[in-house]
Image (cartoon, rainbow, N blue to C red; front, side):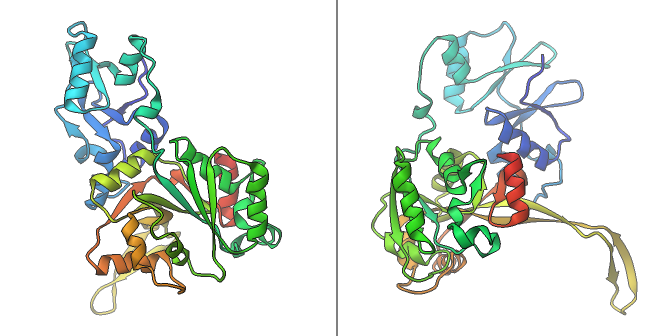
Length: 355
């Protein structure tokens, strides 16, 4: 039996993240070369490893949880499995044979289906009380000549504007309250949504002069009671938004930013010198790994009080001011294939291929 959540212990962190993004479950089963169960791996385990300094290119051997809870084939009942999942607050329960080889797994969703219980996914995956702010006022200089005619959020991908692709990511987790900060070609953007007549709520925040990537957020003070999302209008992040929101709240962060793995390869041999100016050694085509800010955030409402009135102010200024005041800033890592910066032509072409 092929089980899509089973991985080997020597798999790279980068590859494990890609698999977690693709499978429906929030957990992977780690096995050895004989398919014997070694442990479990969640996206939270991977994030903790990355944030502790482990490279994306390293294997998962120090990241997964050993001694997992499991069931032995023909030695359990569905009620027992359900109780174990609930009591241990785990997403996935592996089933093994007497030799400890993985045969299958159970989740609450599978159990509910087997009991013919029709529970709505909205119960567990709902962000219906969470607002979303989309920063949509920029000129889109990198996307000219399209943006000489259209505002950047309306640049099409597969016959649908970028901003609709972004909004769909949020409506899938039941977000329905959207606020668009607008400036450049704002009348066109407003007219588009008036014609669209979406089922979700859209309001506009007019920015009469350019205020940077965070300046216009000042106009939303007092609007939100709960943490809310902020996203650029030219990026698409394919990640679990519920997990991101839970990460922000459970971590007690004031600001959480989503950061993407990015590997850069220098296509030359780089020279390292010793203290005397002589060659020490040559690194042949070295690789460097970075975490890149994607432009997707979760903010607490009171953070908006840090933004000065009527001043050009970037999100980087807000993060820096928050840190200077002792606020807590979290980083939520995602794999590079989960993030597309549609605001530049090379990435726009990539977006067309993957969306």
